Image (cartoon, rainbow, N blue to C red; front, top):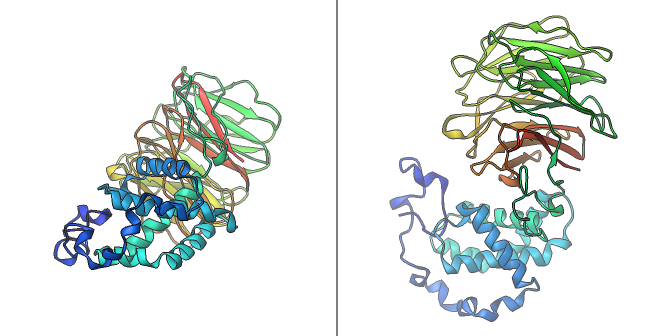
Length: 437
């Protein structure tokens, strides 16, 4: 039987899990092992006097950890609670000693903790827990603590989308931008401190609201008869392209050229989702939709003409989303089977296979990029709050909760290396906005 103190994702698949049944060491409790005979101080209340971290803060983060990351301790045991407290206390005590991004600080503290508390790693290995599970679990706890040190409790529910994270996360409070949205919003940015948002109104027309660097302008009606949420992208200063499904379920296109809005044009196809658009160079646009067979379809503008539709496969259960973080690079995400997040990318020469990133999404995802090889993904979670995960250039983070109560797919964009803006429809059908700078 697998070790009850740590949860392994593979153990739900008994045919493939390498740690299940006869491949794992069976035991009833830690008392079965001689290694624990010398660990009596571990159970004493004054054991934690070795740490400077306030126990109130340790217990708060432990409670938060058990609530938000239950998979780290699926079958709760008091002894594992104390191991987790060890890692939490150590991280709080040493957080200020390390600089760099969250991944660098996590690695540094993990390496120090493993050296200083080698006895704990030895005991867990002696209990039959695979080394990779020990390392990944402790590392995840350290990262979780770094992200939550000093984070104030969330405020109680309020009007609109509800509570937002505190300043420890550098995310703003939610902002109500008004309107009556029939769809999820779309968003693009053609320059620093510039945002253009779009939505389908209650008359099925396209509406536009923009931030000009100092204030939000009123909603502008751009017409059309839309049967989906809009998708928007900018490939250069003062240029915006917007796409949506029309009454014939083909993809329709309208654009701003710096002085006026074009007429709508029919780009064909049979859409069963809202479209997504990205751009990796001036006068280059890549659009994506879900087709009638639930596969991903791709159509692009190469600077002179539109291509035919290309079938990229997959089984999508939501609209796709797409972003480019550099020349000839495209990342596409969608919800797939079992409501999990799936990822596919173009590296300049070929399309990757679909990558399963897990999660349990109740909306289509949104994605933005602050810099080369950096991605932030957003989606609605099981409790209708906004969730996010990110790629730091080498690995994916865990999902974290940004609060709110959203009633649509989110939309996201970045207009600079230190800025991300996210939009969604709230419980009052207005457009709500949250940002991080």
